[in-house]
Image 1 (tube, one colour):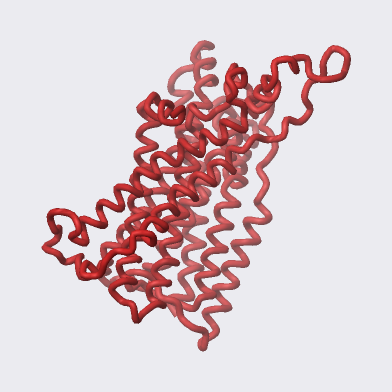
Image 2 (cartoon, rainbow, N blue to C red):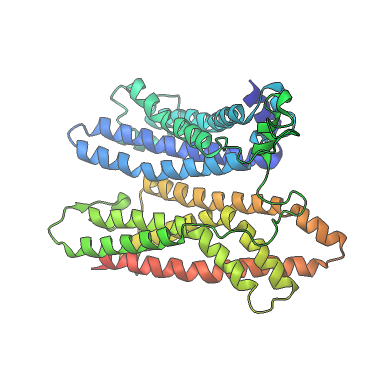
Length: 414
């Protein structure tokens, strides 16, 4: 009940983000149910049904990633002063965030079920002149337990991922009391633990920690994953006798090793994103920077951990889309409706996650911007710093995406 009240009383921007999660959940649930309909219509082709189900894991992962990103930015699930006194410590806030994430995803799954039944003709009215009824096996009774099992995948995965991402951290180095024993506010129960969990990584007034902060890890592992993925693709493309793996929508297929290499490359781009964003900030403030470059560089370094990974995921999605369509250069492609829906889901979730991270970073900079305005900083200084940050990110990430996409497309061109 508390999760429902918090969901109803949220700000309009938070509600829009939750509606995006619900829409992504509805699209993913519809893809899963369409896979079930294909399996019912083609009982003699279980391999094709399993392959379609495997491809549904990609939009499922994108939807869960968006749901976790929205849960991170939801102010209703953040530790705040006084919540522990009413029994809402960090552990219960984690459970509350999982329930808050489950609400829009469950709504999306319900909408997916209604749309699927409408397409099959089980509900009044048959859209598209009944063209989808034959594909979804409208003449075969729908196994309700199987449909409900598929529909619970998105809410369950999103809730578990949100709970893990927002789990309470260990309160390290708590301040000791006057006699060096228990914390001074131990008599208040969980208040000390709540304040320890609520301590931000940066200064609450300025939004910037002293100095630039430590560089995000993951650069060596990310580069190693990218190199390993490209090597696996090159090796798999050279093995002519390897079994080929079909891509959805009639796109260029390839050996299973090529797809494993794509997965490694995408993981590497996601891991290397925060470190590259931090490096962009270091380069901006190098060599005697002025006020604009210093402000842009320090701000980008502080935001690297927040926007770096979504940037890496967007680069992975863009490079994968280019690699799949590059062999058809000059030809007109015609994708099926389910392939189009899956592609839109993956790309839309990646972009929505990046926009959510950018909004969160802007909210974190609000204190810094207000302080600079009070000190008399002109608006052109703030706009120049924002444009410089965006330009540095584009300058680094666009060539990286193009290079990885070209290398990933080589095995399919051959």
